[in-house]
Length: 276
Image (cartoon, rainbow, N blue to C red; front, side, top):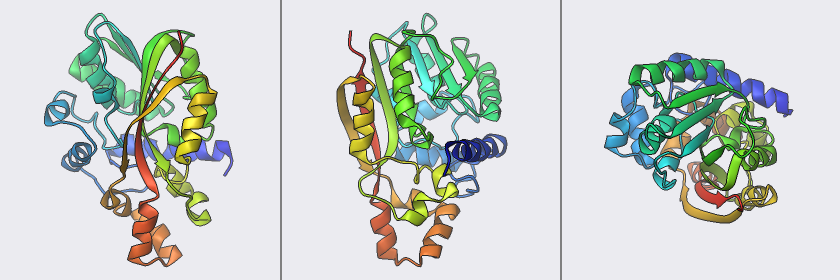
């Protein structure tokens, strides 16, 4: 798949999510479909009841694969950047931690998500949060500007992940930190899934092998790269997506083989730092 084809598919898929409030990554997914189910997913991947109640209604779309805010050790007054901020869920949690003297910037390439996030910010009176339309491969943020970058199940969607990490390195202040939750592969996927646009939008086909992902961070200049968590993504959250069910059906796979494929995908939590 070409990069522009991927971007168009991802943008279209997540525009539908924003407009229809449909959780999960797949562009045609109806596997979650409600606020209650989005909250159920979020609890499974590390969010507390207190966090889920602290954000405006409609900001949690059940799209994550971890809780980077919980691992980021945010401090009062810091400037935070969220790559692929969606409807603002992690931004609002971060805003409460950095306080009125801090600032949170959310960047997303989908206009519908930006509009929804801005509405949520107004609804929740989050005056220290700003949402900017842009691509994470070309961030609308100045050099050496932010203290910490977070991202939640978004970098895997980029067709140029090396460029994403280079941009993250550029906008961080010297000594700044990176804390991401993302999908990676523990073993290669079958070509039919790799070549599927639906599986790409579904956070599967675009994922890098774990070591390749970590190497891209190192090549961008990051140091102190640490895997702080790694979990096989729950099979029921993957196999319940009708998009992936259709792919599995096309492959004519046994249930055991589906489990084997699902075990290829892991949710990785990684921290890193920009040298002083």
